[in-house]
Image 1: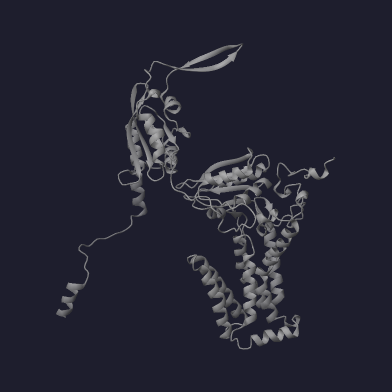
Image 2 (image 1 turned 45 degrees about the vertical axis):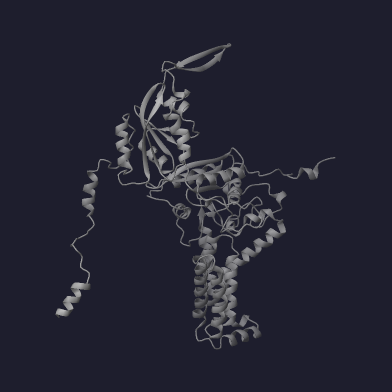
Length: 567
């Protein structure tokens, strides 16, 4: 026993002191917050004080400057018309361009130059009006804020703000705030200089015949991409903030002379009525804006391609861009939108319609092929030719599992291989797919776990799912594929028919921002040539009627006037 105690005293770890850690009760947290002088700061706006020392103490407290290492408060003295004023700048290190701040803010304000060496007796003369060749002029007294804005800060984006919330919003987005003594306002100066990703080609939406530009994480870069493509003054881009803490900027983009006003108001209404603390991605916003949908079918289009977003803008849709996310959300969306690609309009009509037919077939295969195989082999063998039936039975002769276990095993394995190929580093991702498809599939057949015909069924289903342009819609079909497999196993064609009836009924009941999801087929409406199959480009005279655009005509009835020009 003594030897054991000796080993414990030498080698066993004993904390030097005893301590107890516990979280505060909710009541204690409430009491502490109630004594905080900055209580309810997010809910109550605080105006800027005319005293510089009070403003400085407030900013130090608001940004916790005693412990925050990247928030900088720079004090200095301003020379203005022979007088000196104390001032300070607040900015976040790493988010501003130091060279711009030195040359266009600090240098004009601090150094003595011709702009700030007036004696103070001169006033500003402003021409008010010209009538009967007589110019009426008005003499305006010296105003420090106007003088700083108009003479001493040669920066293109400067605005006056009156409360600390506006100051904090500017600083958090990469601007700097200038406070000057005796002024009950601050100057929000744009000096953004943080690193950001340059415009690159789309990663998830492959471009075959079209522009190789994709959205990035910066909201202003994304809106400029839309501006460059649309190239019209009727493109309206409104900024809204979502999230009480993050105050994430969202840009609502629409064509003023095309998009229905009620649709724009509905989008802005939903955005303005989101009571959340944070918004970090377009995917989160999509879930917050969509109506209740038991199927999980996407009701908005998510794209990283500016050309695709611009095409929908010109058709009368609304595009929402979230700062920090390289995706735009297009609304409303209908079923046929998820089976089309932006390249379709760049190709000849017969080729584009052929591809659209293939995509519809691929959606059918992705959703129903495994279920149909299970139903046929379990209940309806009589519809197969005798030779094919004998081939299937002989291939399953040595398989010890029932058909449902066999197909679920392979489908889940295929989904695991797909997910592994996405998550592993890109250099070995294709290797994972090849190993999973060839080695594991061949090994499973050789071991008698699955039949060769099932490998063909699963491979065809997987390839068909890759042919669907929209990832969210393809994922939805892959998810419901398992439901039809179970229905086919339990009741054969009858189960699949009942499942399709319920599925189609639910899809027909969906509405995306007031537009029926299965338009223009159910209810049957006049699509003005904007159906699933494309009409020749010279026949696309109208915009889709189901979004009720202000301007129905997209082009003249005789768009190719050169063809009918009289010589």
